[in-house]
Length: 116
Image (cartoon, rainbow, N blue to C red; front, side, top):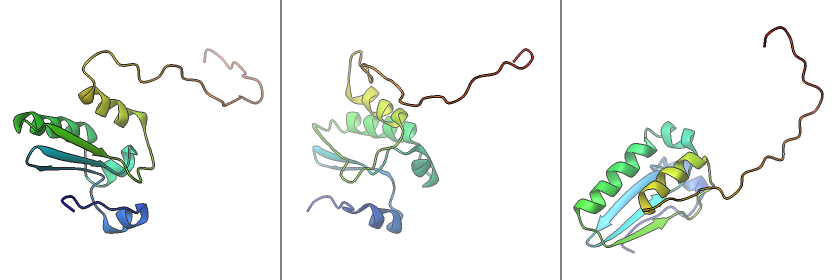
């Protein structure tokens, strides 16, 4: 196999591999995204905004024709990471949410105290 990948989430955590990784071989690049969880990414010493910017600049400079985005065993995370990725792979207006709702129902009454 040209590109190694960690198939198991627990193994990835144990081995302390980077959450975000880019490997380029000839005209094929594999971008591995193990999580979109900002705190896990930053806790591993990475900055997702910087990673995407540098990675896509590298792909442009190398004139890479093929990009594989490997999200196997990605357990999700924060939307801002997905939005940052989409800003590089979509070249026109893109609506990340068609509709966004919340299922949280407030309990009790709100009480106004003073000017707050």
